[in-house]
Image (cartoon, rainbow, N blue to C red; front, top):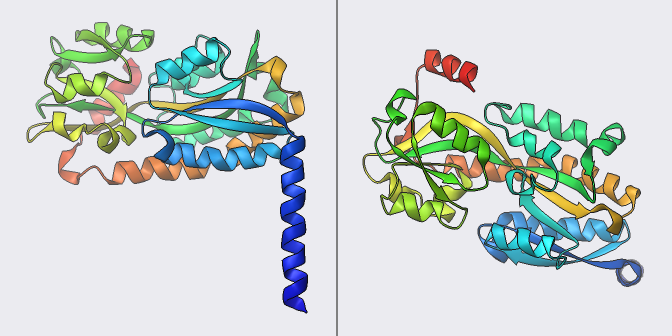
Length: 294
């Protein structure tokens, strides 16, 4: 008898969920994940899609391994919303793009406070700029400098060395010029190849790219990863605000903030997979000096 009741309850719940999904408004969410549909970030966004049904939106997810194409498809109207890095989303929403400013947030603890503060209803007006609005922010990982020579362990030793810099990341170009490094234009799809093929001596990236983009090839036997966070990458849900109601936006931002730890776990796991022999520790005095400079 109990088993029959349980089965009936499960079937009823499934029927209600199916009806809710059918009634929800259909939208397209384009998701950038370096590993595509098999990536961990994309898998978490499947849970986001399930939650969104309860807010009245039934998303169709599209995976992208090339962030530039995802941004272009969003701009062209092929996506109602897109998951992009904060730097790539900056032309649409400059305010949340500043979260990734070099030297602004040294730890994940700082980033978490910012993300949860911006999920508050009081911050809603700051999440919208013109036609665009940010519906959620997730941690994408602390940015580290990858070098092919462990001797490049101070700012002074970066002078004259070739650094892969994302074409759309103006701040990093300024930083490279400030330390005397030679900037080599790249994007998400090409910077790893430049580093791995020895066309540049340095690149910067979160640890998630270490395995996904095989940065260990560029490190080789003489290089490493400098254990000093330059900035914090974020994944942001960029939307056209007219396509979603304010209640959806608030629910979405709250969901993202409450799932901060799930994305953070991915970042920490990626950092743990970098061999200890590849990490380069710098003196505390240098860290203080760099904090001041940035």
